[in-house]
Length: 148
Image 1 (cartoon, helix red, strand yellow):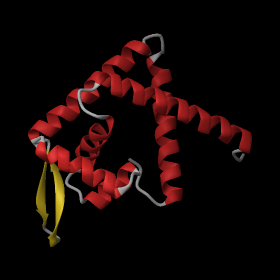
Image 2: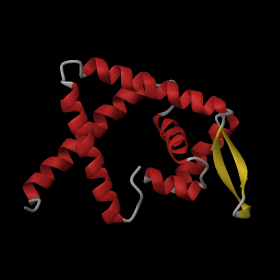
Image 3: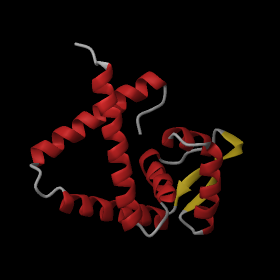
C-alpha cells in the first residue's frame, strides 16, 4: 500500500496544527525563548556540536543558531570549546546551568501536556509517539538529515 496525496495533505495539516499548539504551549510555559530552548535541547540530545551541525539538526539557518548561541554564551548556558578535530573551529557545549534550564523547560512542557492529555490512555499515547518517531525517521532519511 502506498501513501496517497489526500492522506499526506491531511497529515501535513495535522502536523502544522500540532507544531503550532506545542510551540504555543512551550512559549507560554517557558522562561526562555522557544528558539533558545530548541538549541539547549539540541545540545542536550546531541552533545558538543559545531554551529553548522546544530543548525542542520534543528533545521534552521546557521545565522539564527549563531545569533542565539551568542546570547546563550553570555547567559552562561552554553560555552564554546576548541574542536579537537580542528583547532581552528569550536564546538558548543551545554554548561550545567544550561542543562538545568533545558531540563526544567522540558519538565514544564511535559507536565502541562500530561494535564491536557489526561483523558488519553497511556497505550494510545505510546502508539502516537511511536508513529511520530517512525514518521520523523522516515522523512529525515529521505531528505538526508539525521532524525532529531
